[in-house]
Length: 297
Image (cartoon, rainbow, N blue to C red; front, side):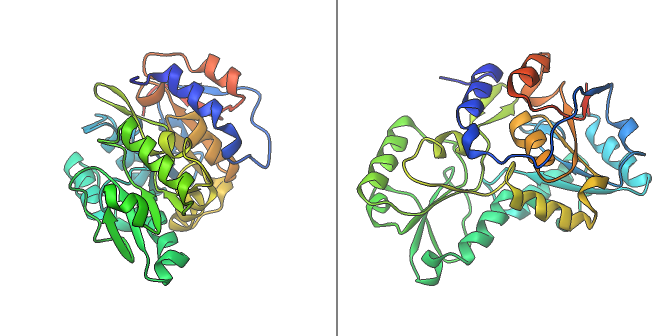
């Protein structure tokens, strides 16, 4: 079934027990804004989600490059924190340049790189074992540490660990086969994209987090809303969390993760997850309350 906002929200609620908890409560209400401009003077740094804030699928949000330029012109710092893990870093940077952004490589923190760091330190890699990568056809794997091969039928039994990078081309049949192989012989699973869905031009797509949460046994998640991703973003900004605003389009990844990291949070409502919807009922149902709701980037 192709997901929409309501189905995706229900799925996030179903896996809530896997997600982090903020150390302090949420604000009683969110301040409404037309766009992000009023926040530029209030904070010294911004962690920006990509999907829903900078782009929707392969289309840039028209106002986004100019908004990033405004933030820079005010002397404020910017980092992009993305759960996009299907493609190597160089491809992601080229995509941003093509869209008109001037991000330095140090300003883009991708969950793929965070998972790669975990793989490099993992016993599977240290022992010379083989990782089976769940990734779109033709996805590059050379940037990943250790022995990494694209998942095939033989690797279901022979791989020493699995890393989930992207869900394009992933089917219920492949999901069932992987789940069966893990029940027969449990092995480590790393998920480099905890997102349940991604907003694209033609609607939502199911993402690795949706499938990883349904696998038997534990999964090691790398990316939003988990703490390692935000620690990496704050280190890139070199700012204390209380001086940083996390800007995203999702309650359960961006707002929850930002709040758990100690940042202020801003939900962009016109693009991405809540496009065409009032986020208020979803906020009330989840109890995840952003500090600000901006209609647009």
